Length: 374
Image (cartoon, rainbow, N blue to C red; front, top):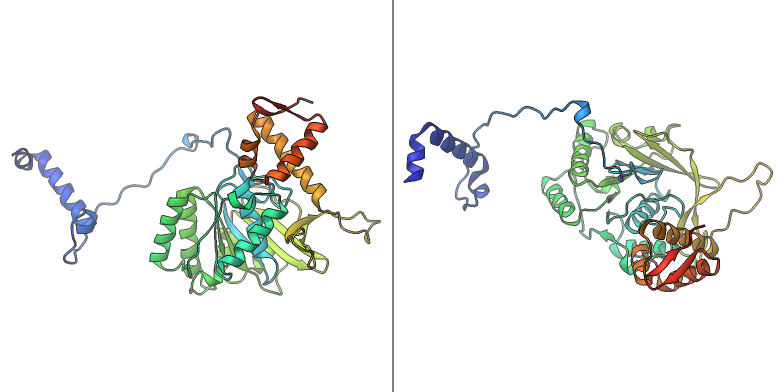
């Protein structure tokens, strides 16, 4: 009776009209009803774009960092990890993922602002191969692999130029909420013409929209030409949209003495290029897992000097710094809490704590380990 009365009033007529338009636009499935026949959507008047004065834009919270990994990747940035084939692009992408997932310094050096899950799809490698690489990186960085929050998409294929695959990727991001999404490599993720700016732009725009919707940084691995240009971004294969798209881009190039990493950002100054080396250079057993390391530049008079060693001693020093930073921020913590927060093996943590205790940097208390002020 009430519904019938409403239909007779102007307000009821407007309500019924809105319901009719909404129902026609959504269709039977959108209303939760079985769909028995095709329907035609009724055009709805478009809404104006959302506009704010610049002063009304809400700034990030005081504790939020502009970086995901400083100075390699901006928070929430989309971008390219580029380089010629066999230039360790996947290794670099996995180093980034392991660092973000664990909160440990990337490449053993660069701090992660806020740790969180990393989601990886590697189209050219079997999942067990990627697992092996990640496990080796965890060992190299003294992390507990069993608790490391790097998640793998284990589908046989993911096509970014197909609406259904994009829909499934959207649902996956909504479910897992990664802080970093790694897609490797672009050439295996679509069948579009990479030289067609319109087709490339459609795919890249979809990835940016996903990044903004879910607050996830997106690292897209892409090939560069072997005889690249002087400017790394111009050496990327295909449309110039790849270069223009990136908020943060990392370019890896092979040199006679190792690898050169070039970094660029849309909203931050570019740091100086870095020399990298994939270690160990030859088989050295399980105690020396493969990983990327930053090579410090030699002095002008020491060109023939061996590279700076990167072994257990430097690893213990890095772990000690992580322990001190954690205790400084969070206060006294039990051994188990430290192990879970730092994603490190129990034996390594115990050794580092004993060393810090003997040097007077930390002390054991009933509430756990605490920092001794210097």
